[in-house]
Length: 509
Image 1 (tube, rainbow, N blue to C red):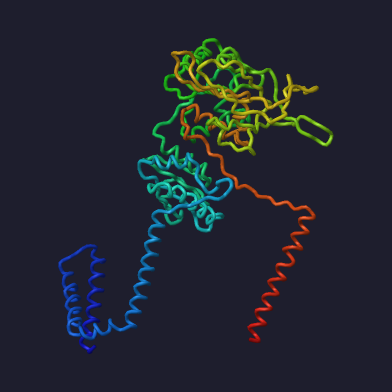
Image 2 (cartoon, one colour):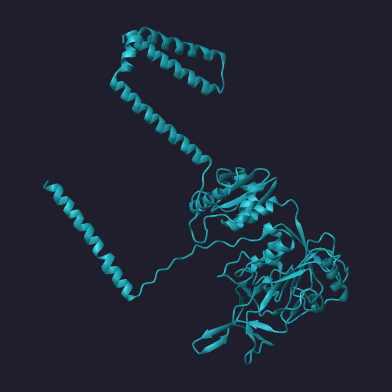
């Protein structure tokens, strides 16, 4: 090939490069791009025509054919790898082999994400140098990726507080270790704890279009929803419900014996005085009309609700339920709160609770199942620890009946042929909702789950955080000796002997 042909091939390649770069830079085709295209074609055709014989001989050589075959194979392999990676990025599948499914979102979370109708924005605020900053960012990135795998409508943005102080002030960010905001259709919710339970709860809040209204009955010595100082107050519960986008209002049935039409849930927590007949009639009428009621009683204080509860097959026992513990000197009564670790695995309120968790009550009263009317269902959702004991008073003399007593029941159905579907939750203790006990163990989850079920918002049911299962290996003395002399000692010696043998063979080969 002469010098002119070589120069033609060179400038042909330069013209092609100019054409490609111009097309990418301009983002479209323009008329002047025909110039490098024409130069490329002309400069390519000239040497092909002039050096046709040489090119034919070159491609006819055995070495050329082998080289082209190898080059083609390499290009095909590279093209296959590119295609596989593109498919893997766009559509991929993960498998979770952990025993507790700790790396898999719950069905509730997946369903919420798949039902998104518009874009959801997650904004993570952080500050460089803050303690735990890197760990929190990594943990949130890995967790939100599980949600993004279910929908392409979720976007993630990281904002450094010092670089965007205007945005930090707008969102009210005052810490740098990691604060997250979810935004959806103009609604915003703040998250400070990075786990699936909190993110999914926040997701439910921002996707809910209207707030639910919960009325707390007052006027019968109930626990005060405004009292934030007294451990027996309910202000912590009020704040918890408000943060979950429930609207909390007081309801005085003694003044207006009728439940408002906009009530989604009516809560009666800790009445110390008997309700008037008008108040009881108002609650019964509300239930007949398809209402939802939470009743949490003080220990051994029925508050005149016995006749009403009997219509659902529920009887309030006149006792205290306490846990029995084994001590070095024999059995004894556990001081403090009563543990209730037995939950219904079928009811929506408690089916998410695991076996190694519990609700804590303060000397609760047991509930008893009686004849359940037709058209209703009654479920024991929380029961005391097996072997618990019932006492008529707190003097605790002698021994009483033992068992796993029902402490919370949930009823559902219709009151009469003309009634609508109602929901009722009855708990034999009101203190588990108080300021002093609300955030102990599963008390918070039971409260929120009960409210969500009563408000007919099953997607608000809390998700119990998943705990990785621990696999334990226990060896007795004989098993440990076998492990040491069968594996721990001979295996390293065998590897050392093989290494020395290979080195000797290569050294003196």
